[in-house]
Amino acid sequence: MNEHDTLNEPVITSYAKAPARAISAGGVTYAYRELGPKGGIPVIFFVHLAATLDNWDPRIIDPIAKDHHVITFDNQGIGASTGQVPDSIEAMADDAYTFIKALGYGKIDIFSFSLGGMVAQALVLKHPELVRKLVLTGTGPAGGKDIDKVAGTTYYDILRAALARSDAKEFLFFNRNATGKSAAKAFITRLQERTADRDAAISVKAFQTQLKAIKKWGRSVPADLSKVTQPTLIANGDNDRMVPSVLSEDMHRRITGSELIIYPDSGHGGIFQFHDKFAPVAVEFLTR
Image (cartoon, rainbow, N blue to C red; front, side):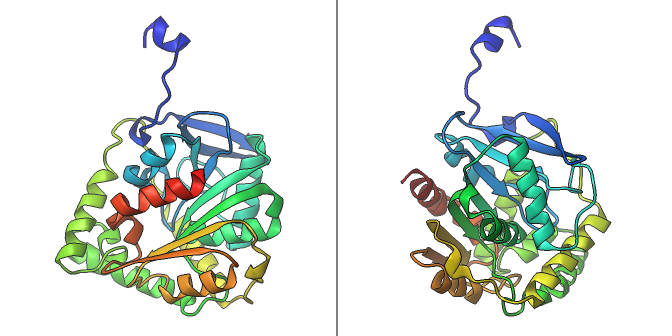
């Protein structure tokens, strides 16, 4: 980098080029990346089961980062972050809160997917003043029907993927028809766009602890989602085998004024399959 670049750094809006950063709080060092123009309310991305910083689809992040300050992070015990993964969603939300406060933010928007959406709900209910807007994708509420079966589905698909020598996400996130298979391949390819400075992989123990937390969440008492007064956008595919699509409708009914999008002929990764349709909707929702 020459001297000129340092003095007048251009705004990075490509997730593939987002600098890796770290911040310590509460005895844990959190790995994160940030991009997009600073200032304004940041959009914090809460990632899915078994995922690290490298699992975000650039076709979702980049359009949002064009005009928003975007931050992705590894919660405690994930990827390059230190510490141990807690075995409850609520404790994960406490860690996320610690991370956000360490960065100095008093107001954020949340973009969440899958497990991240469960953590986001727990965080919003505990710290409503922190969150301005909420995006919940591929996720479900506490006590949601069949959420406790996620572990079984996940292990089954990991096995199927191993036998097919594919990435498990191809089975877990997408339908196994022609449309789904090609969307899956395209998604997996996009996740490889960042070549330098990639994240550490998640450990098996961390993954198993996350599954335990999801099972607990599925078996816990339903939360009072009528308390969520933030503008909320909910999205999923119509055939989510991991977190049943009906749970998106359930959250939509319970969160007053929320918006719901269900994409046809798609699974858990519906927002990735339909990124060209979904990204502009998410941008419009966050900008509104």
